Image (tube, rainbow, N blue to C red; front, side, top):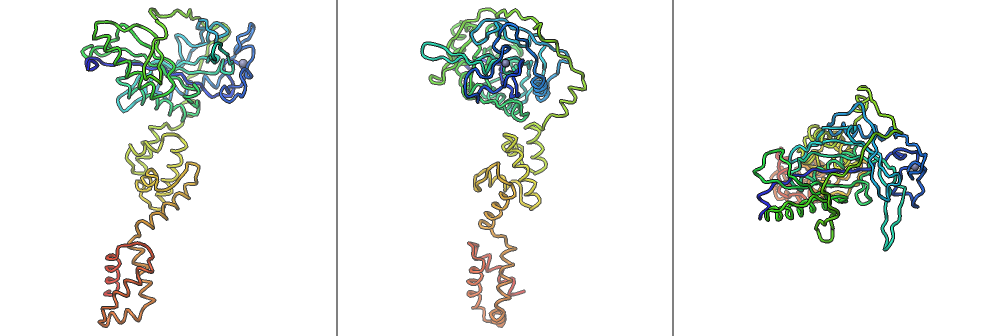
Amino acid sequence: MSGNNYQLVCGLEIHSELKTKSKMFCACKNDPFAAGKPNIHTCPVCLGMPGGLPLANKKAIEWTIKIGLALNCQINLFSKFDRKNYFYPDLPKGYQISQHDIPFCHDGFLDTSQGRVRIQRIHLEEDTAKLIHQNNYTLIDFNRSGVPLVEIVTETDIKNAQQAKEYAQKLRQILRYLDVADCDMEKGGMRLEANISLKKKTDPDGFLPNYKVECKNINSFRFMEMAINYEMERQAKLLDQGQTPKQETRGFSAESGKTFSQRAKEEAEDYRYFPDPDLPPIEFEPAEIAQIKQELVELPDQYAARLSEEHQLSLDLAQRLVKNKKRAEFFEQLLILAKREKIESKKIINTLLNKKIDYHLSDDPKNTIEEYKKLNELEEMSPEIITELIKELLQENQDVVEKYQSGKTEVLAFLIGQSMKKIAKKVDVNLVKKVLLDQLNN
Ligand SMILES: [Zn+2]
């Protein structure tokens, strides 16, 4: 296949709505998904009416910096909001408030199993209204207009579709751990965009092709993976024919599994950015950033590493326990209790992961430990317990023991039968016989 001659050059731009109580620049409720009715959480500011004055949401700014710190970014102590001018029906002001040349965060990274993905920048902006296309008309819902939206932009470090998927999934996991975003992909709370081009394998590191295809508004990790793989094949074919793929924006159709052209983009658009005169620049003291850093929760990779070390689990296994914070906390409680009860951590975790016990993350881990103990007693009765039970039996049958010890060894069969009855569980009869003989000849 021709694709073997080429190397993917890919960066991701991921948008995520923040779940602050109010919108980015007004006091309207930030609740676009559960609003019940369209256009109820609106005011002159988020409807773009003349005279509406924006006021920046402090929480949203702090959360953006928190995201930046979690992604190992540098933080700009001086920053500002800019107007990005363009016209579209979902943008009544005729411009979007965004950040142009001084984003809150820059130069970070996120590690994946296939290597480091550098993060170029993280900026904060406002979401647009939602367009709902009906048969022959379009409705606009302004409940979403002005919802805080972070955009996280990577460098072109992504080597294949699988790594793109892993990066995006890890990013969602971190945003959820930080408790700043729900990242509901189906509802559009998190939106994926992949910039895709190919270079020759012989091209040097850092070489950028002279074209770029943007696949926009992808709402599932799997679709993004499919879109990248499809584009790699499509572009390789064109390159093999001596053509340069068109610089354009493409959508992805889940039905066909293919990308399709949406609009050509021969030149970079000119949004005529300028600082928003209604919003003063934002300045931070280093101590304020240090404070936010101090308040950061333990992130999934650190959490997994700690569980692995404290409870002698492989890192792989620990990583399966920390998919989300609630799950991580449940398993950590369980592991602490297991340690106290001298239950081997790997054993109980595997029992749960293999679904041999029915458990829910809302359960009290104490009950789960009890369930595990019960299951274990049934499955493997320890030799110590068997010995205890047999000792008891012999005490109750002193006369038989005496008979045996005076040479009537045929009573052994009777004692084995009685022992099996007393143990009342499926155990190895040879083990019972051995324990009995040990006790009798003692
Ligand atoms: Zn409003």
